[in-house]
Length: 89
Image (cartoon, rainbow, N blue to C red; front, top):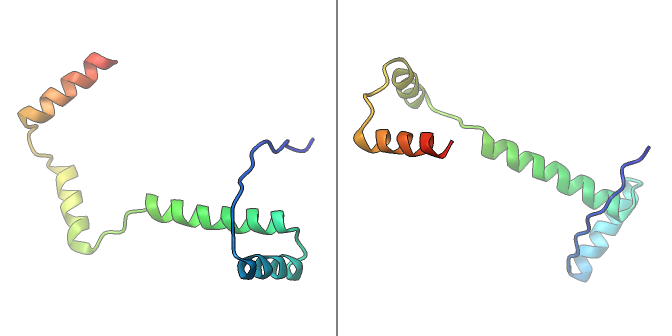
């Protein structure tokens, strides 16, 4: 059973942009909606993946691993924050 599509996005674009999108959709044998949805979804996935991934150089990686292996003692500010979090739960 196909998924019902309930959401809509309206946008304004130039005549040139519209023509280019129509041509690209035709070349790929897709409707304009399919082309735009596929293109936007692919780009959104790339942006999200890039945002979620942290890439560290060797020195930064060593600092992270050192902090994990030998965490510093909690400060008073951190202790207060942990206590507030516990009270919220």
